[in-house]
Every structure is written in C-alpha cells, then in structure tokens.
Image (tube, rainbow, N blue to C red):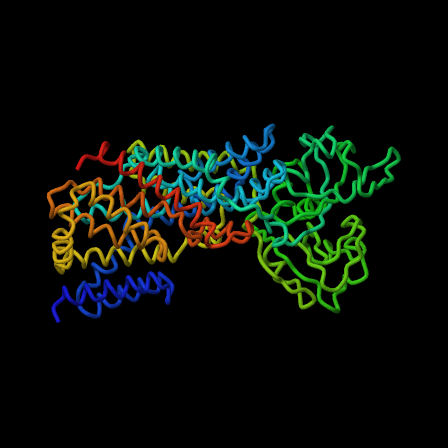
Amino acid sequence: MDPVTILLILFVVALVLFATEWLPVDVTALGLLSALLLFGLLKPKEAFAGFGSDTVLTLASLFILTRVLLRAGVIEWIGHALARRARNANAMLRAMLGTVAGVSSLTSNTATTAVFLPVVSGLSRRAGIPASRSLMPLAFASILGGTITVIGTSTNLVVSGALPATGLKPLGFFELAWVGVPVALVGLLYLFFVAPKLLPDREAQLEDTLRAYLADLTVAPGSPLIGQSLRESGLGRDHGLTVVAVRRAGPGGEGLTSYAPGADFIIQEGDTLALEGPTERILAGKTNLGVVSRSEQKMLAAEGGTPGATVRLVEAVVLPGSPLLGRTLREAQFRERYGLSVLALHRRERTVERLGQLRIRVGDVLLIQGQADRVARLGDRFAVLGDLTDQQSDLKKAPLALLLFLGAVALGATGVVPLGVAVVVAAALSLILRLITPEEAYGSVEWPVIVLVACMLAFGTAFEQTGAAKVLTGALSGVLEPLGPYGLLGALFLVTVILTQPMSNQAAALVMLPLAIGTAKALGYDPRPFVIGITVAASNSFITPLEPSCMLVYGPGHYTFMDFVRVGAGLTLLAFAVSMVVIPLVWPF
C-alpha cells in the first residue's frame, strides 16, 4: 500500500475518533503519531519536532501566565470593581459582557468565564432576573473576545504556529482584530438585544452546587465596609455572603454578639462578621472586602512567615474519634495542636452561631489552611476531601503579575522580541519571583492540548511530505472551483463550524488548515483569507454546549442542549455574515 493511501486512511480514522471521542483527543493524537512512525511515514526527528516547537512552548507559557493572573486576583478584581460601581444592574450586565470580551482577548476564555461566573450571577440577582438569562451570554462573550488577538484562544496560536511549515507567515498579534473586533461588536449587540428574547427563564443552580461554609472574618482598617450598613455593603446581593451574626468588642474588652442583624446595621472597624457562603465567595471576600481571619493571622505570626513554605488550602471532614468532637476549635487548641488554621466550617444544617462558638461534630467539613507538610500530618481522624489552594488569590501580587503579563504582550505584539520568547521569559520570572509555585505552574498547563498540537503538527508534516495533501486538495479543487473564491470561503467556514461541534476547536482547525491552503493554491487564490476564515470559524463555537466555556454555565444555568442551538445558531450566522464581508476586504483573494 502506497504512503498516500495509508495516510488518507489514518486521516479518516483520526477524524472519526476526534468526532466520536471514543478515546480522549490527546490519546487519539498520540495514536496517530505512533502510526506515522510505525508505517515509516515520518522519521523520529520529524515526528517529535512538534514537542519542541515554539508554538507548544508559547502555549504552555500562556497557560502559566493566565494562572498567575488568576492567583493574583487580577481578573476577579476587575469584575468586582465593575460590580461595585453598578447603578443600573441591566446596563452593568451589558458592561460586564463587554469587559469579559476584552479580558478574554488576552487570556483563556474558559478561565475568564470561570472567574466572572459568580460576579455575573450576583448582578443577575441584583437585577431581579434569572441567571439563565445572563450566564450563556457570559460564555458567548468570552468566546467572542478570543478572536481579537493571536493569544485570545489556543486555537489562534495553534493555527499561527502551523503556518510557517506551509510557507506562510504566522498570524500577527493583532491581525485577527480586523475581523475579530467587528464579529465581537455585532455579537455583543446580539447578546444585548436579541438573545434575551430567546433565553429561557430558569433559576440558576449555582448556589445549590456549592458547599456553604461559615467563617468568622474581622473588618480590618481601611476596609470599604466600614461605615456602611449591611444593605449598602452588598454582602449578600453582590458577594453572595450571608451575615449570620456580628461580634463587636465593648469598651471594657467584653464582646457583644448581634445575631441575624438587620439591613440597617452599621459595620465598624474591628467587627467580626460570621459570614456564610461558598468557599470561593469567602476567599474572594478576604481579597476584596478588607476582612481578615484572625485565626490565619495568629498562625502566620506564630510561624514568623516561614520562607519557602508551600501553603495549602484543603477541605477535610471530621471523622469519628477526632479529638475535636464536642469542643470548639479554641477549646480543642486546634491551631496549637496541628499548626494549621481553620478558615471556615460547613455543616449540613444551617446555624446562627459564630464559627468560634460551634462545637465540632462528626461529619463537619473544615476549610483548613497551612503548610503542606502539616496538612499531610492531619492524621486518621480527618479525611481530606479536596485541595482548594488554586482558589486563593493575593492582590498584593497583582501589580507585578499584571506588569509581567502586559509587558510580555507588549513586547510580543510590537515585535521587539518574538512572542514565544516574551511569554517564556515572563513565565520564568513568575516562578523566580514566586508569583506561582512550580507545582501550580505545571498543573496549570492543559497537557491534552499540548499533546494534541504537537502530534497534529507532525501529522501536517507527513501530509505534505507523502503527497497526500496534493491528492486530496486536487480532488477538492475540482469540486469547489465552480463556487468561486467567495463560495470556497463560505464552504470552508461552514465545514469548520460543523467540525468544531463534535471535536475540539484546535483539532478542527488543524484538520482543515492544510486542505484550505492546498485547495486555495491549486485554484490560484491567496491562501491567507481562507486561513483567517478557518481560524475565526474554529474559535467561534456557539451551537452546542461542548465548548469548555459553555460547559461551565450549562449546569448552573439550568440549560438544555437545545437552548444553545436556539441562541447560538443566530450568533454563528452573524459571525459567518460579518466574516464573509470583512475577510475579502482586508485579505483579498
């Protein structure tokens, strides 16, 4: 069997496996790479070259830099800053969607959706509208923003990295903006005025899917809460936190506790608020509201800020036989015994007590913070349920994190240094300056995407070297030639959109790229506009909830599969129409 036939068979098999996901996409890609080696279609050096390509290193570094921004609370701070300035909640929801699109143009759209999810949910409650009418637009806005720059989505970067092997220049940093900005603007108008008429009215399940914790947090000097009433503070409305009780120190040092305080209760410096809410809301409150955990502060003071120590945040359930049972945390001397701090506690039934006054029971879940080695020595009286370390943020690191990220983007965008060099250096500096730990950095990299990209780059090389590209594009050119350049662009766009529904966006783009370039060259057209069309089509996936950003809101919004089809189909058609007008004007055939 000749090499071309073998490669085309492998191509069809891979296409079926990508579409059905009978195997994970990265496993399919590795299997494809193995087949290329076993059949002798590529030499080992050529097959493994993708793993050391600048595209793969750039992708990995961008994953790390995005995590650095999240850990520093930069994106979260932007969302809460907008929420605090809200006057008209409906208008603010629209402003939030525009902000999401802008942020997503420089960071992962999945991470952007995850961070803005609780903020947008809070604004929905404030506006008195079901979150089902705002969460899908949130996901779609993040996807729209991803088409504006070459780092907006990994798909854009993958296409750019694959172009030099075909003899074409990589995508410029803002090259896609010529079509990405018009698509985003028209798409946002659709989300503002048309989507609300198509979206369902269903209450979100966001709160139901999150474990509610009780935490004692003290109002620190300079907190924005000082002098505000509970109503004005927006603790419940904007931050998803319920004030169960407030303890205020009296003139003689004795404490006075107010249970279930009214909306007009005025918050003062030094008040200890018993707050109930999901873990991320409590952690966000510590970051944005100027409230602190006295237990955490005492633990850090006792340790003297141990340098180099890895601090973990875990959920641990109290098991039978624990020395804590029947005692408060202070009575059990938890901090002294374990060298750890309990930030919050979850109990199945609601309580009106403060955390410091609760007597521990079997089954209580504690939110515990401390050095990793001490967490590991909790013993057999606790069962660690999960590690929530990545949910913590530290705004003190935000200026440096933002400087590194924007510096890398500016240097790469202006061409002072290659983009890959800029982001690799920024990622290295993030590690050196301890903005992120090595474990977190490696954990932030989406390895399935890295493996997929590296393997598909090798497949592209084999596609060219064996002559399969000429055979397949020759056959396609004969069929598509009567359509003309506009028909060819439209056909490639629509086929790419169809492929992105069952398979990953990156895989769809890498499958279509050599076909589009080869067909365009065979018909005497400039391949550039068709490359742009495929990139835009692959990055804008709205019709099904299989896009990661859409999956994040699928459950919380109570959505059905057909909700995405109904709302996403119109947005896809708009993206198609705008692309068909703009692409030929900017990149002539």
